[in-house]
Length: 279
Image (cartoon, rainbow, N blue to C red):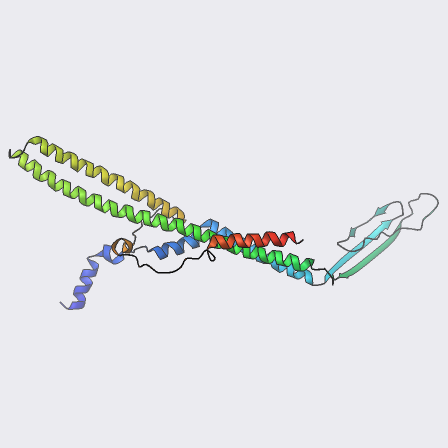
């Protein structure tokens, strides 16, 4: 039997190790940013703000207005279709007479107007600045929402990681108490120790079993919270226990609030309010 065949046998005999996929913190943060609905809504708000900015830029171009009119009536009454949008509305009538009459006359008019506001005295520029500030505000709001949501997802990740470790600890504690109870029961049956010692060991084993159930409840709870934050169905996440087995590396950096998402959002909001006051 060659070495490759032995390796294949070993791989097939350990499906749990071969197909288990650990969920890392980086993956959780990316999935939280991609799937959460409030983040998707703010991304759509950015697209809407960009479209409004494009519309505002078109106001620099000339405006062409078309109008069509067809009337049939007199100076005292007007009948017939008429359409006007931004142009001049003119009604065709007969000559004025001394007495009221219903002598009808036919008339039609077709207009084409071109309006171009060459001088706007900075009004269009100010509105464009407002729309630009609104786009930047929506982007800052999105970054703040992503930052806050990733903090929540990271907290749920670490809480689940701790609860899984505590569940393993409680399981080991139950195994230890079970061994102690087995030994105590055997010695009590032999008359080496009182029966009450075996009963105490059994009670300790029962407490350990209760602790396992409580720890499992916490695991299920944090699994559900993490699933909600990732906008996914309930999943039994298998987390990467790197942070529970290694000491974090401390990076010596001076913290600054200038690039904080909340600071940028407040700054963009003040800029937008100031721009609106210029109108």
